[in-house]
Length: 315
Image 1: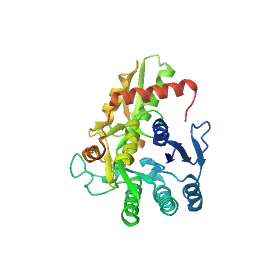
Image 2: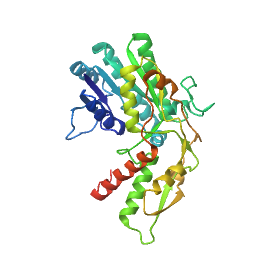
Image 3: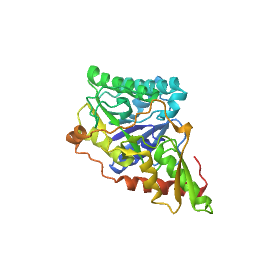
């Protein structure tokens, strides 16, 4: 089996490629920047170039496609909305059109987002909930969600859409909350403050989100193409955890006394205070359930940042 993974140099993409390899697939990864020593075939390609995407698909002839490439930062989407919307929507359109014409039998997973739901009318949020995106990133993902559904309905393609809620784990950028806290704690530990204290900058401490481990998420993506028919599914834990609770639980794995400081620059516009999804539909279709305990996710993320800080790697 040949698996094409877009966004392979990103957080979820790297984990997705590793999971595909573990399942015995031949992996071709696509990314925008060099990826030296990749344990799979790597293609550096611009998904905004339709001719380049078509040539890639014609060459690879993938059996399964995991489309994970995206500009994924909510904060950055407020700063450059046009760029985020163009990249997320156009890259999806180019890929789907190339697959329609050059590999129409391939199974495709379009990674969408729980952010599309916006302010929940009820909790937990199910797939029938209306899409009411509250930021440019969420809007772009709602557009790609509808686009992927169109290709499944109108062209008969095997496209499964997954609306993943927040996911975390080792390898994530520090623009996301769990990784941001873990990095700040790891850097404070390395500095060995004489008073044994660390002050961590946060956004709204009361905001609650539904977190899953990225390794559970990519396992769900694999099962989605292995077992599910074309449809849309939530991938989530079904539990909401507050920002303050995340910091408290991370601090339990550190020798430092961790204190919190609200940073106005980290506060979001139009903040939705609680998001929690239901994975009942996805579980019924695939048997998937989250398996990795959230505290394990936190420990692994903190240890990953400790290794990077010790090695002097800051990006």
